[in-house]
Image (cartoon, rainbow, N blue to C red; front, top):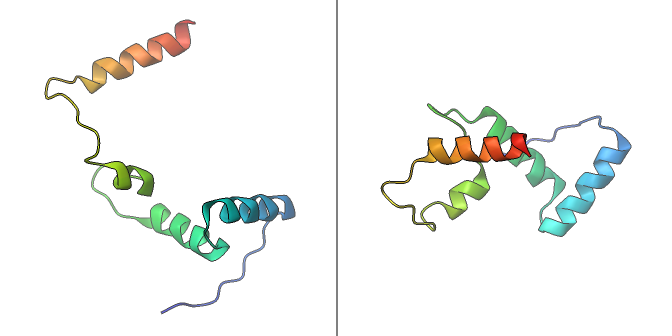
Length: 81
């Protein structure tokens, strides 16, 4: 069941959100609903964004992939440049 909600937001934020909504083909209401859903989603580990959920299973990662090592390398590269 949908229920009406009134929000008070900065005008600039509203305009930016309207532009984003138009670019993504969504309504402001659906964006706010998605935000609250993601915010309140209960997960035993880390929360996974809707984008990640959509692409999960579409990328094949080698069984010996060491994500911790790759993360370390990426952070070192970022901070040592």
